[in-house]
Length: 602
Image 1 (cartoon, rainbow, N blue to C red):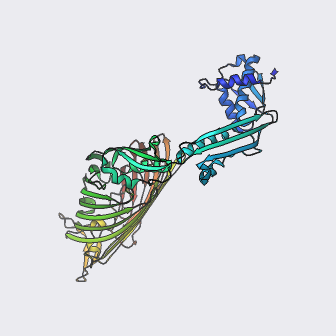
Image 2 (image 1 turned 45 degrees about the vertical axis):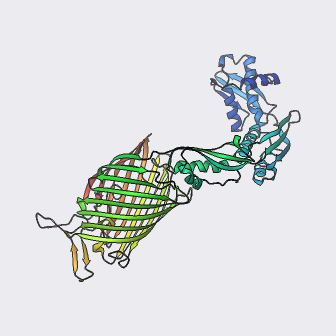
Image 3 (image 1 turned 90 degrees about the vertical axis):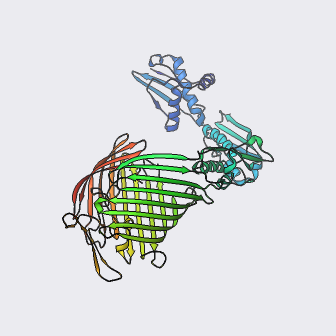
């Protein structure tokens, strides 16, 4: 049986009032809706039906059919359909709503006016005139209501704190299928930024003024205040800080900005534990003093301990105009390394000055540097060497990633150049260039990483190039399947620049007196590349396969080394944990290795 009816105005009014209450119930009946092609309309109908708590057994009752019809009418009216009718068909287990939307109301007249300072503000006018409903459009009440809210928010965010709607009206003439819209905005005056009022320790006043992206007397903008808060929180000086306008204290249309802050403790200490196949267990101790003086100078020091490497560094940082992205760093450090697989022992003392700069919100960072390096080392020979270098340098880096830990989309590029001259404080002429990059992309459950690295050293005396500057390949972040720094020439032949005699860099076993041919001594050139694919098999788990290739060499006559294998990623709360089983293939070694890596891929 098919029941037909028309919903009256009283029923719509009653149901509209009821719908202001939260819809706690879900419509338990599965219905088909016919006569509605617009997806938004159908979604709104179903949303309104969720407010009804009825069962299929009562749908033969005309009262409940009227309730259904009234609900549908209420749902479609905001979209201009004020003359709709609905019939309910119940046939066995099927419930069908036949909706006749009828002719919608169209906009016949739109009257808009701005009163106040906003009338002379081009951006304000453009925003106000962007009201999308025009004469002849089908009435859409959500557009009308959203515009009123968004215009109010726009006015407040641009300093029109006295904004109000002097008149808004939506006149509906249902018999004529017509709607008239009236919008009169009273913008009021536009306020400006006033002085910054600091609540807390006054020592940060100079820093705050340098972080401020606006000047007193400039028109107020919430976007600039948001940027100010971002800079304050990223500066590294405060454990808690917030900047807010105090409109109630405005004088002559200027709004003071109040900053409430708590400085970081005078000293902070951090302890970090980690492990990787290349270095084994490692311990990192870090001390930081974020405030040295009122100009925002800071100092950090770090002690790093692992089996093959120990180091101690101190970094004194002087902020420039843009404190977060523009600073001078003066660094000093001592490092001792002992890599048994490459017969390398080295003590290195460095002092360096770095000038970093980066545009706000830019992924590009640049670094100009001057480095003094003095290294005492043995590398592939029993003869101890000491080399002193003074090297200007320049680096440029691009880093864009969607998350600092669990990266699903990211790109990394870096170019580094450094040189020294024997008539300018260095023992030898040397130029070192390194290019590297990586990319991560994710599509649904598929994760792909590509990375590559290349480098070259040009020098007049490679025999005296420090071990820390030579190129090696192999290890967790290079060619898996090989030990850390295991891929490079196994001997080097040098010509003594003073005598012209040939020097062969080999390692002699002290017990047998035989030459060791499986120990790396470092090369002039480096090239590596890697492809890794992973598939997400569970919420925080990925299965991976990879292949790596490359070499560290002097002349590229030797073949490339290859690594391939499988592994898994665990996306832990502290970053990805990656474990791989890898097979290494080269002219001098074929081996299996297990690799363990903790930390982000880029």
